Image: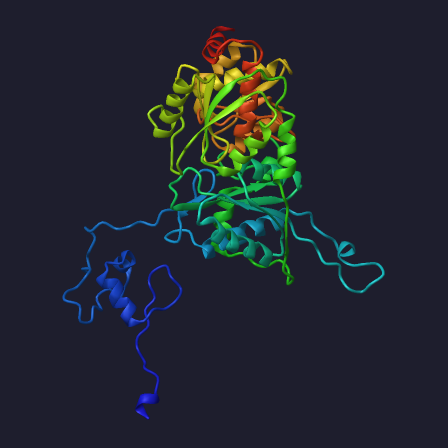
Length: 460
């Protein structure tokens, strides 16, 4: 009889966790110096361990502080250690809850059919979901899509994509927002979430909410809003679940890029990009163009495209000189940030690249404005003003710069990061569009890139 009775043993809950663990797991974590054991009130219950693993006043020992997952432009964390499928689902549900609040209010007459007593089902916000090429992305996107359906959203899955194509899809589908699973800017073991709202506007930290120029900018969702809603917990808006469908965003995306490449002279470009989606897109675009792309093998790693000593930048510089290319281009893993190398193997400064493209675009619209980020204010604002361009400051974040470009109808924008924003139906930051404008600049005459940049720097 005694053997049939359940064994009653104490249950332990680690700090910051909700589920209980057994005494055996508790002792094994103590023996392994589990970081959370330093703050556990049961850390003195060591059982048969040889000695106390953590003293009661263990303030001198280094502690592992919990790092915030939120960055300036999104969410980043080590896969499984910091960012799991469950955590990604919680963040996605918080974002969906904010999108529901941004929908127009529905009155009683809008919710009922005149010929029926049954209420009309209210459609949830359309949310575009995509992911990058990291091995952890399919697992994370599963949790994100499930959370959005649970929040009664209409999920549009565009599959594996790049950041520019993802933002294009949000604007093209007229969606309320979108979530891209991406760890760009970090090591391969990391993953993350990038959020966008209507028209493909990036969601960043709220640096300029008080200074917003219009009502839409003041109501724009920020990363702080998502963090706060996630801590409060998102409540399901409807009893019914949402829907999910697949959309091939690459088809209209490629069609929109084709019109950008025309009247080009034969050029040779040494190009490197770790994103297969971007390489496939460029391969289709250049099938019938007189431009030759010499591809350089680029590994999956974190890089600094503005550092001339970065290994990947050095690979492109060496390839330009070895292959006698007209210029070199290194595209980062976000598909937007670029490094440009002239025919002499020298890395162009971001300010030189922005001013060069502004010269090309000003030929089409002489009174166009240029938006620069605050980090490049002292360097670029006097230089742009000397060329009689209208210059506006775009803030510190991508969200602020996007809004400034749309508000001022600017022809281009950028600054100290290497990202170039160009005007399309909505402001777009795309390495392929940057490449198209570079080819247009070099196709006006036979001058090499270094000479074109020098003439652009000296002209006023």
